[in-house]
Image (cartoon, rainbow, N blue to C red; front, side, top):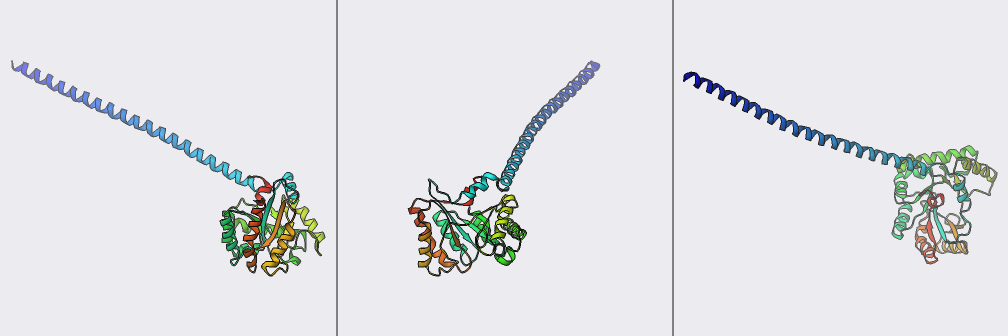
Length: 294
């Protein structure tokens, strides 16, 4: 009887041990299954995250390539577009252009007005003024205006001493623009010769320089209307008289104005100038529209 009791106790202990072992195994299996499921989910999430990161990187890369392409040297067709900028258009258009800036005394007021009127313009900036007022150049760029190139010094005897000097002043100003706007891909691509691209004692040099610029994919643009705000028109009445006299019967107008430090009258006349173009059905364009890459 005693042996039976002992054997029963041993059997019960074995059963308990087996039960405990089974429970442990079940717990281990459940725990392992949970961990495997978790690891699978993590693996899926990591894979999805990797795919998401790759998509973002591909999008960033595509944008960078598009940004670089946007400012590559002009091709033959784009250069031809600039050659035709003054020609008759079925849809009337106007390019507001401002030279010799930016300046703290005039440019901010012009930018405020353009913003209020929802009008874009082209600023032919001087490198020396970009150096002095980079924040204004960045504001022009950020607000959608075109930043074109007017050389660095505006000193005819220096700039027009050689074709290389013209190109050097363009490049120097171009680098300053890049730094000011924080975009190293940017190229101004459009140049305005101080004093215009023809005539005067430096005419032959200018013609040679125009060809050098074209060979480098850079267009030169003058104007076919002006206010004479930098050539003797020292009252609002004279500025507006010159304006009305030079815009008549033109359907594609490139108007020359200035935002140099002493040109506050230009700003004061600008509301009337803009209203004239709006009233007469002109679309406001910038050099972006001529290039046609946007």
